[in-house]
Image (cartoon, rainbow, N blue to C red; front, side, top):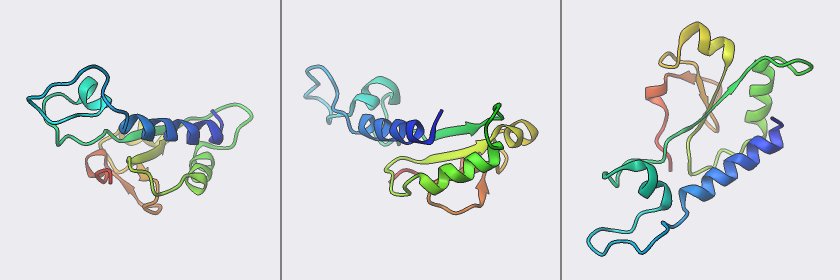
Length: 120
């Protein structure tokens, strides 16, 4: 997938995060967004889940680490959602719970999945 398509996908997820719920609603509880109605379950305080991108080897493409770095150069750090990336070699060698995730807008240090920052 091209960088432009990945960035457009982030914009769509950001828009989805704030999309109003469909239907008539319920006067007995506070209004919820569409994603909360569909996926979050009862707790309203549950944040929007992080978006995780894995860069894998591909023919006629730069190495996964190079593509990951280029994506971070292009991605805006002001998303209201948490966006983290890794490479397939790192993920398969260490697993998702080890510090393999690099968060957009938070430098080059890698974190474990449980240590990803909460969305803004």
